[in-house]
Image (cartoon, rainbow, N blue to C red; front, side, top):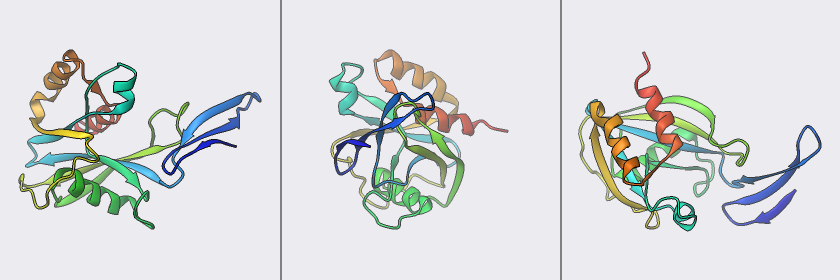
Length: 180
């Protein structure tokens, strides 16, 4: 049952196995979420510094560290996951990848609260060459940072010490960076 409905988000209720009401958030017009780990010249990763209103409203953090990401099919009818990866990468970074590799599908970000799942993809980019002016995504993206792969762990710790929130999808994508 839909409890609250907006263009991009619904609050819904269902019954749990035990018969209790379970309230969760659902994106009615998106099939998935893509999270893209841009790997530049196999040496650097491109991160985003974002202002996320829910984190700010609750006093959790002014900024979060994330990767380029976006909803699949929310604005482009019939969009595939692969199409969304390419378009979100270009839109948020201005970059085009020579190769895309999907690392994980159906990654549940917070399955007790939201119904959405994530697809994690690596975007291999030979050189940092902006081909299209990146957007701020409604003012959310405030900076883009290139970090050397061997400095990521320390850099993320420093961001956390500054009071920034680190997105779980970023950590999940980084997990696949070091797979054998």
